[in-house]
Image (tube, rainbow, N blue to C red; front, side, top):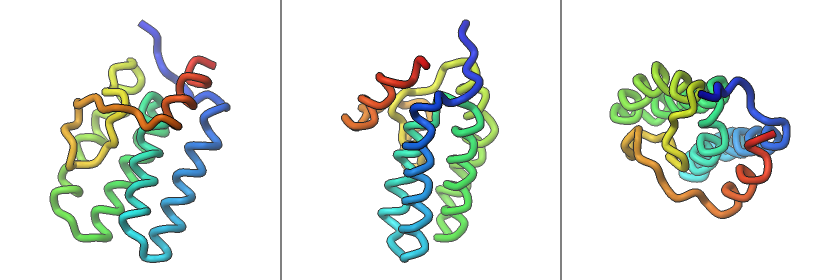
Length: 123
């Protein structure tokens, strides 16, 4: 079994860019755009425990900000178990991470993110 410790350096700038874009959109009051970037950051980071949990933490804070009980309650188990699943390599690839999607449901990767993950995920 391969253990996943840290995000490859080739993916990290794209992951950080998605988080920064989410923060910027949220600051501008563009909440749908902010969420979209959190979902993309989740897709990029879900294979690595720290990055995976960091996105779920931000999703939880976002849910609190918009007072969405479903999102808040949905993020709690994801915070508890997401990092462990990343560590042992059993995440549902492509899952966007929000409470509106089943936690274990694989989803189709956006083309641009699929290319990034294909290129760098094995570094």
